[in-house]
Image (cartoon, rainbow, N blue to C red; front, side, top):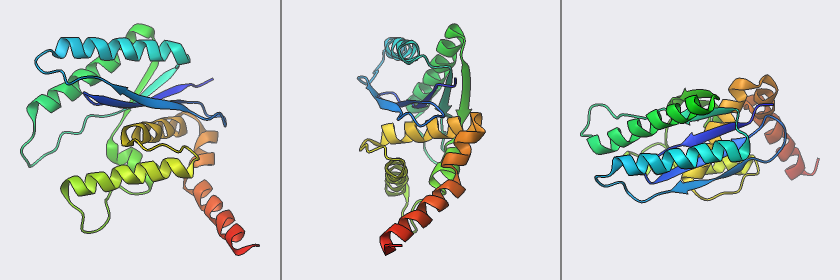
Length: 194
């Protein structure tokens, strides 16, 4: 049986979610660590130890993580980009060591499938647009009955949902746009008292 770990990784707060294609509620949380400063090696070591123990603890068979996003056409924080690439490398190393499947997904791809959009509300830009998209991830989780309030955890649940729907046709049918439309129709009928 597939047991997938979805990751929304970052240097200080990595959202994680473990789920299966059946109706079992997922396990999820946030792995927090102190900023690395000039000690990337120690930060990567802690992240790798946590990741390996999480995979073994939950019996994970596959990992799906968010591909690092590198902004174009603006000033970027090279240290933040290095950290994201270090994390991606460590995810791949740990999965290879344990011998489990690994997949990465671009942020726009999972957002389009799970949130139904890659765009923030009209008129929002910069950090406001980012916050809006993170709020949409929390809302998407609430629609699934996953009541959480941390955007790292919410985005990991969305990455997990994307990964599971990619690996399991049954899961994709249960959680895809047509399923959401059917649920909406049921909610409307219930609201109307039909």
